[in-house]
Length: 403
Image (cartoon, rainbow, N blue to C red; front, side, top):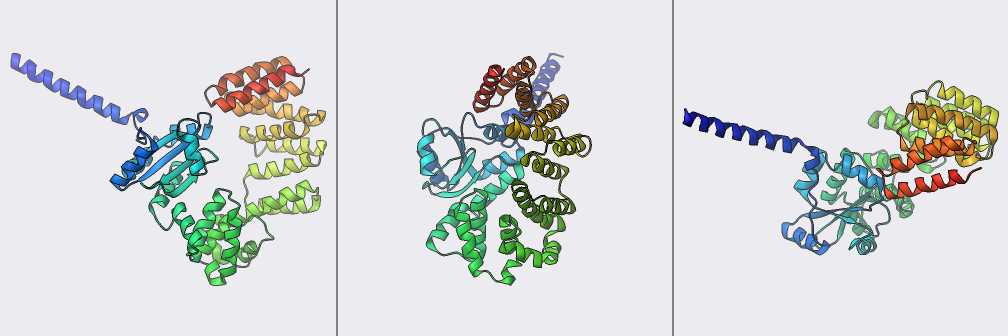
């Protein structure tokens, strides 16, 4: 009997340990990209020894997108499995320790920035900004592919040894970084490209990346060969490029108060199956840009009660646009007050909406309620970032100073 109790106890302990291990492995808080500790030189030495690239997460303490990536992307199994298998991962605060020097060395000027360097410290690839898991893995795959890695492409470009496909890969990545050099590379491509190449996959990549205006040479080519591109890449993808060009024109016509042209292009945007948000924001912006209070009130009411009735973010965006451009216009601000109240009732825990609610109420004479909302925004900002907190405090001080 005693032996049976001992065996049972051992089995119970084994079961407990097994369950505990299983629980720990399923806890996302204990999993993620395995960031190594040490100096940058130690990472380079390790990369050279293991023949692996070093992935560097360049962040700051106040960077909200950095925090979002850490919370929502780095902890996804497909992400940390790929990164842990293929890279030595390292993260560094760009305002502390070695951060400022590395920022100068690799020209890091926005956050987050992701560097991929080899054991010699040579930049192989880089990416920027917040992105979803699939795109983040895609950047890692580019780093591992010599034909797609940004640093490799930049080196080949300096040597003057690139074919059209490589130039396109380089130009599109420059364009993603909003680097002015992208236009120079685009011009070089257009000097060399013929019609057959422009109809290829690389040609489509160039078109989908660089068409912003319906007066451009690339848009003209797309328009002449629209059926081909729709067959190869789908109507929705092609329509997306058209929508981008149309929205650029809408902005120009709105700014210049070209009413007839604006509404002609707005109809084109609708025909291209643009989202209700894009249509509503463009339409309302026209009346804001040209200070047509009556038309703005009518249009914004129609959208809020119709296509945007479940979209508190867009409703708040319209209200915020009034605050930014017409805070001294009584009729416009009364409508903004109405809109932000609707948005706030739908999402009282959304920081952006709470902040806008506080500011608009402050400017429409509801000081006490505005201060309460401003204090709420400050408290919410504590959980976001120090930069957002600073801005929330400034907004609250401004509201308190209003009469």
